[in-house]
Length: 376
Image (cartoon, rainbow, N blue to C red; front, side, top):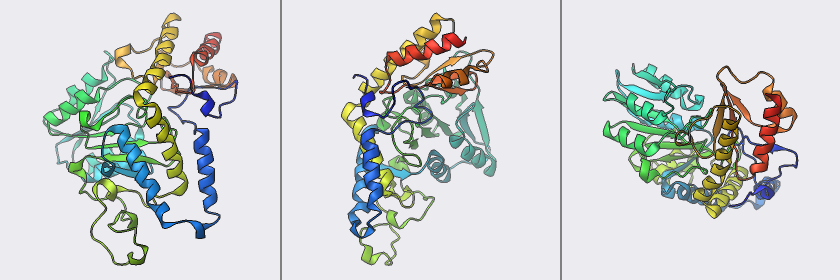
């Protein structure tokens, strides 16, 4: 794969290395979204099929991304929505525990804290491992009292890697549920539900997947597809396509995970944008995308080490996201210096979080280090 910058509206002189904050739309997606917006100017021309056919295509593309079935996918507006579905449908008893990471992203934390408090269970927070191996640290925290493990494929602050295949084995060994937030890796790090077997997996599409804000999807394992949704949407009920019979109320939901769909899932603008974005990933393949981005994060690691800065070793970081760690904190004026020079990254804790994507190349990395070295 070569750099795909021409597909995005990123001006010359802007070095955008911050997909972990917000991914840009593809230019084609923006055009499609604009056309979809204008459909609402003429609602009399909006066919009933637009409520169903585009979401069905989205289910297919989302399922293809993770090697699942379209019926395993639900459309959700956010990670917090998806984790709330998981929390409402997983069993836990008093004295059991829920395992999360230190400084885990809030959308995959608050619901577990509440669930533990409500059921007199314990919330186990795995501290930052000095050895750098998050996988071992999480696995060591799981025991016979563990009911749920909620985590990600990488720590969102600096890209520290978590081996989900090994974690899946451990959770199954102790009959614990596994809930994943893959917002920071899906589409750029290969993931297959058949290898990991999570109970639920949720992703927000607005970062690495080039999707719109307030849109994402939930995977629910077949064993968890008979649960209670957060909403009782008419679209999630059987035979919703027949608008003439909607008041013939149905007890049955649509098949599979569709019962968990958010209300108004057919959002004509967001679905259209998300479909175009996922078509990009289907065309190029996650393996190719991941390999390309890894050449950039490896280059970042090399440049950082050359000037005495600290990054995680290769086996302890994901392909798409890397943190440059400062023992005494990121220098106070550094964020402004970078942004003043139109170099965009994130500061998370004691790290500069650098998140390149397919629109970046090594010249962008060189520009980042030019400004960084000058500031230091």
